[in-house]
Length: 314
Image 1 (cartoon, rainbow, N blue to C red):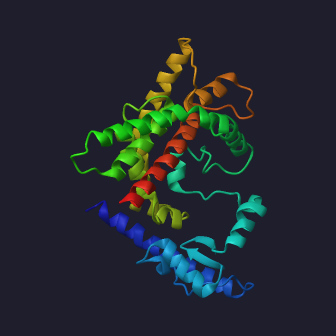
Image 2: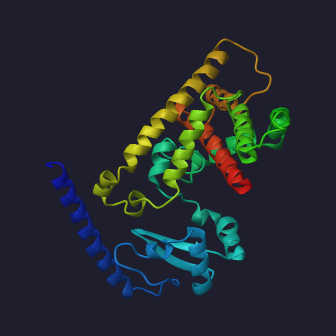
Image 3: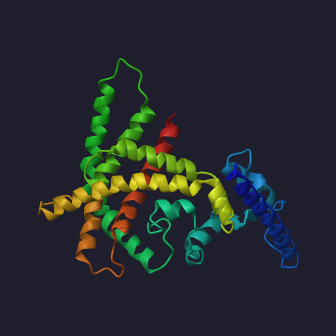
């Protein structure tokens, strides 16, 4: 009971602080220049109530029909602009991409992606350009992708044989497709099927689930007490430790093999990153966390693709 009272007082104090801060902010906006079109909003939460009760992309599409292809949303403390026109999206993503190159500071990216050092959430700058160059030239070039053809063919054939052996039984094709994609990912990324592949997949699925919606930590970043009350940081740190242990084991195995002088005919993605790390010559020397961040985002992206295909096939 002694612990509950202070937490309750802190929580309600934070709510009152946010309420009055939102009122002051809304009053100051009235004297400013006209903003982009926006739906009606509430103190504290802004426009978030418009996204409740429906899939977010459908709720935003409904708002676009009423407000036009460009409109403004206030998500708690976070201002956002929604672009729903293909022409304007091209202007933002291609023509004026540098003006929109900054990444949002999300708690999930801070903890899971090794303090924003992966290619997806690293701040735009020299480090991000270096990581992007490595990925484009060393990991995702047409020649490199073609070198993994035998892996794709072998795993696809294994899937066909597995289905053929179960002709008298019902088959969950979505699960088998998901397994196929993850087997290919692991072999391309680290050279073999991961020893703890099932555990890694489960951890990434849990992270995707936690980061898939709105979290008070990201919506109200200035109210630190909410970070404690929500408990999201504690959950993410626990997940990150488990993932980090798996990747430490994988990286250690590769480093031991390289130190023993084993000849590597076909480098996997981790071999490439470790070679660049050992060779030096980079503007920003790669740390062990940088290596794991690049491999993690490669696995995460492809496993998200696998999850999407799995849901599509259901």
